[in-house]
Image (cartoon, rainbow, N blue to C red; front, side, top):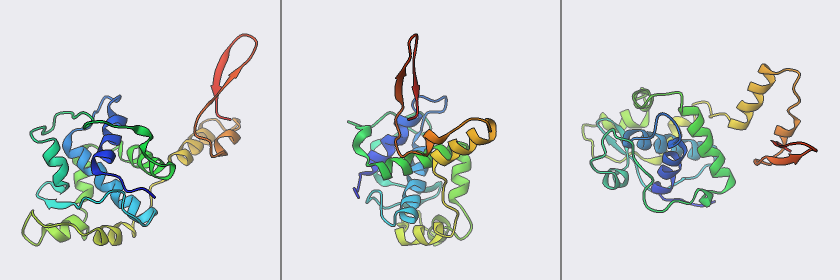
Length: 194
């Protein structure tokens, strides 16, 4: 049960999306960190990082990320300082992958709209009339604990394979091992989940 820095978590998303056609900009990094913190509070009952979100006019944000990426605006951002993807323990890496995969289907604007949910933490705090107010983590947990949990991405893969290839055996995906095994035959080598 490690407590990370917000830059560790932001770097995970920046690195994850750096190979996609839609790299992360500062607003997207802020929102992905927000939803990751909410998911960690609800799923694991603990903080992923200590920084506190503030209710800015554009949605929930972290002052530290605003400082580190000052002036970045909507331009893609790069990993901040040193980043080790192996930093996260298995449970937290799973959670971050689930968040990255689940929220990938939404544009940054759609993520902002999701964070503006009626009765949600951002709206509750922002409606008090200032964008300098902290959003209490208890408020985040209370609100998002009433929402459905994000599915385990490995379960999503299992369902996709089962529905697309009903005759395919996916017993290898039922194992806890997350890395493929190289299998050699007489003429070729391939990767398989074993």
